[in-house]
Length: 389
Image (tube, rainbow, N blue to C red; front, side, top):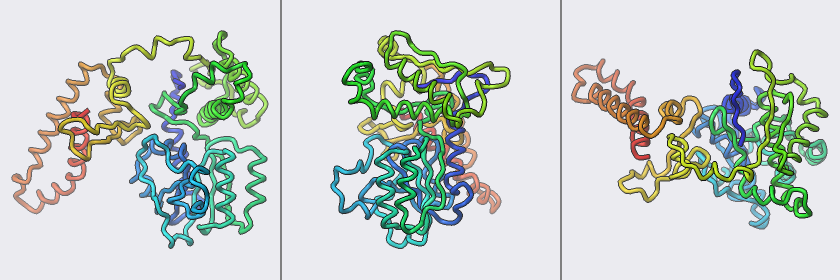
């Protein structure tokens, strides 16, 4: 994970939301109803910063996985082990499991990681196109070899554009990003040995994700520092330094600009600090993550006594406009949190009493009640959610 502390706010959530705003319109080149095709990783990325209703309100007819045979008829004949149909990690996007047959006139916006697997799926898709045209957006740097492969395998000339949107990381908070990589300790232990090649895909994921963070925030590190005792940290630092120096795509500006000084990239190895993960935090977000589990901003409350069915899985997101209470109090300690929830409950009870149906005495009162009802219902859900947690 990477945490930013710059005064000029390297905001990962704003970066990703900016890309999504451009993505759902095909960067202003794809108007009208459209289909959004994702992979397992980009599904998680989008769900961290946008809700299903937000995306569907932007002329998106359905959201589907390109690598899911249930939503992609082109994969029906393939072996079930040839693809990874659905990630086991939860997310907030409700995916369409069966692609309707009447969408051939629609346009497809694809947001995918630039991997060999995804390019193979695209080649297969373009050989039997389901949609009128395709707008391709990749979450990282697309190698020229894969771009040539795409160009050579578009027999129906359905591809309208290919772009790179550097959104290859999950923004947990504005200043905290993750790559959701599991089992990285074996990779660290194998660094510099003959077994290192067994972990190449995982290492490449970390390298590409870190490059994407820098590109999304338009920063070229003034210097890259690493933990001396870690061969993996050194290898990653060397590769990042070489890539940012040799590839002109990183040459927008050095450092962070302004009065905040220059941007330094510091790469640390968790194996050198095994104690920190064992410490217990007493702040809201940290306690939820440690005690209940917080995966892709989702908390599972299944099996908890007296929890309503609609609260069995809830979202705790730091993205703007999703949960103002959590945004304000995610770093509050346990004592402050209890007082804040009590105040939230009292405010809701006061508003509920003010807008009670028993107070409706005129047409104007009814109209005002209907206008306030969606906001009141949203507040009710927020209160129930935080009280339940």
